[in-house]
Image (cartoon, rainbow, N blue to C red; front, side, top):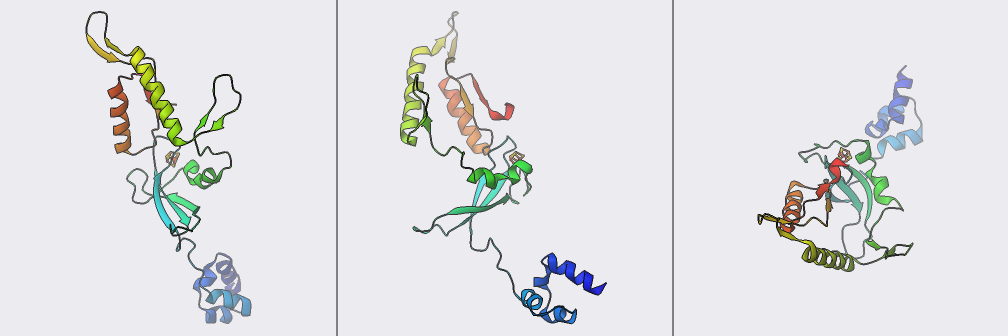
Length: 199
Ligand code: SF4
């Protein structure tokens, strides 16, 4: 009975917390005793913490991402662990199954990491820079707004509407980001404005 209990503790990793002498007294040999005396370094001890928001749904749970590397110039950062942020008021450290699997999402080979453009009549997307993408979006929005903005309706009432362009925002943002997004989009006169919380 005594030996069975010790084996269970050993397999659960509790061996590291037991004194080597106690292990030896329970009848284990040298290897078990050495393992019990070794203290495994905490795997997150040398990582850099970065706070972020889960991108999946409108709950917008806070997460902490742990990455290797200390942000020095030649260090190659790699995220090795993601968990709920216990200080975040929305989720208090908890994550649903989707959020708990964020590490796979981060390292997925099919994750889109840059803007892509597919021109008229073309079959393939091509990678473009963020500057080019933002310039193009701004240009197209400006041209369309100049062309289609409605300042007054047929009765002469001021309406300031821009109905030919819509905007889909991300709901998985902070309150502050959501507030600013709303203000910017509404200030243009866009009415067709939504986010993926309702998708
Ligand atoms: S962890 Fe789950 S509930 Fe929280 S934002 Fe992500 S998907 Fe939504």
